[in-house]
Length: 486
Ligand code: BGP
Image (cartoon, rainbow, N blue to C red; front, side):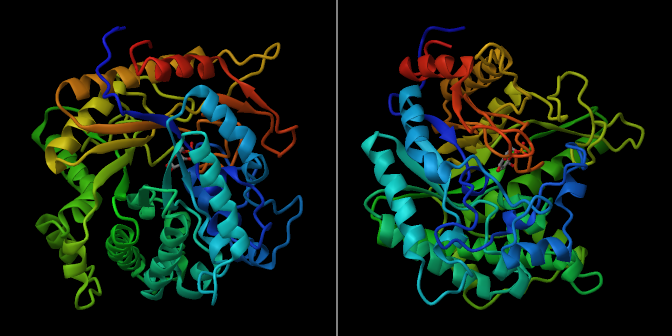
């Protein structure tokens, strides 16, 4: 516990949420259904079994498109941020937040993705939201695409596989820049752009079962290429429409360690790390790395790259690199290596680390390692835009005593401070789910991340009342002292 502050004076402390996980009001104010609304909550699916949870049926899709909303087919709920944002922003301001990361639900602005004109009611909602943030001196950091594309684009085009979605997204972004140019300076394009591989439907509206036989991977990479091009075009437009604005890419930082120093494990680990960095490489350096190009060719994946695409990638690169960091990963070539139970995505167990109830291996030093690695590679300012601990909090006698969350953040903040001491340029830190929201991976409420408790259970029952947890008062002190008191 150091009492010397090494965080820069203008360090942006704050929180992060996403529209689809917080707003609710899924069919209010002219909003069209989004992919998130088709991922209905399935009470029987294990919270650890992400792939089963993400599996979709035609019935889910048809149901969301029809607008039906009954107990058997609940849509993405949120915490009614749509109606309660003033109360919530007041709490964030009280906590001292200097920045709040939110996203714009694309289908609130363009309900079908390709409407002749944007939905004024949706535009007004975000105008009012950003205005209130400014009034409270909370800087908006806005994600344009956070797992919430219009469902109709997914249905019509198999999402980002089709080039037309690039046009639709660029238009949506232009409308946002024009409308919010006096209010928003910091923008992110695609949340965790690499998650297109892990859950292509929520990330990019792609349903693998719609691909031709053997072409699912090809389609996913094509969708990714379209997102890269869109990210570059949007960066161009943002700079042109909002002078002085800054645009960041956003990736899931999954720093990976070799399970042993066996050279096979080291090589496998290196390849995992290169694959994880590839997404930012394209958006920062403006080109596909040679090893990735070769790897795609060897896997028989041939991208349709239109004339001009490569110039676009090269010409409009991002200003900063943002990322989420929840855990590190471990790689092993030994099929017998102990794996994290119940979740195939999380891989091999690291014997030196404890894990959350969901198997996410808690590794504060991994955050410092990630910061050093990213800064050395890109030499761009970094922004930690998600980090936090999902836990099953309990209210006891009107209090949530979440010392485990305080310990988690203290350990991570210390590592950020250490990285800054070593010369890394970090713009800020927005903790994930600064208020309890619906979990992206489980669609449940009981995986809570916030400093503010929300009274709602997994079935959607509860008063939705907000309650400050112990961590709220702790974070308030951290921010007030600019990280000197942790
Ligand atoms: C990231 C997403 C968020 C988010 C967070 C925590 O992948 O960008 O939307 O929710 O992870 O994940 P979960 O909600 O599944 O615990």
